[in-house]
Length: 203
Image 1 (tube, rainbow, N blue to C red):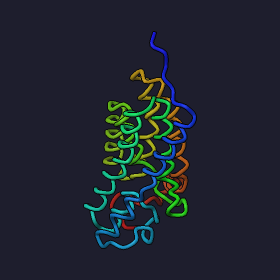
Image 2 (cartoon, rainbow, N blue to C red):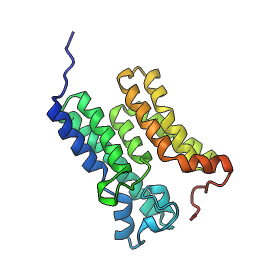
Image 3 (cartoon, rainbow, N blue to C red):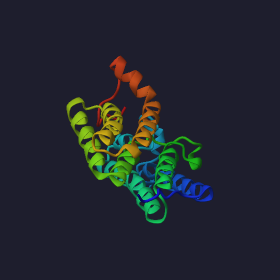
């Protein structure tokens, strides 16, 4: 039996920091400013994620933000996995998610982490990532609520890991899902009240 390889405490701290710094790059804000759309924090929910960037009226900017935010999750997982053990991979992924949601550069006011989460799922174990993305797309197409799609798509991730035999990733999946539900607290309240804006609305 091959012994499990773990990363030293110092190595874990290093990869945690790298994950956080990569995750904290505010692509939604940068894309909107570079494309002349102003400060995305001044419109809609004030969020820097792709859904709020879409409220600028630019589908291209929203798509680019989605790809870049998802790419952060992919990059952190693949980079860490190339040089460290799996414990460091999971910690770096968690810290990248926290960096996106709580970036130090923006006073710890960032996005809600959905795109970054999906990118991580694809890099950690691509079948689960694909299932999460498909779930998001199906729910979004039916309900037209991005938040509902995010809650269901990410909430199913731990179950997908369990069903596909990736038990070592279940705890991370649960933690990330709980954080996403926390970040979507206001959305959950609006969904219950029937006041949540649908995809494409500017407010």
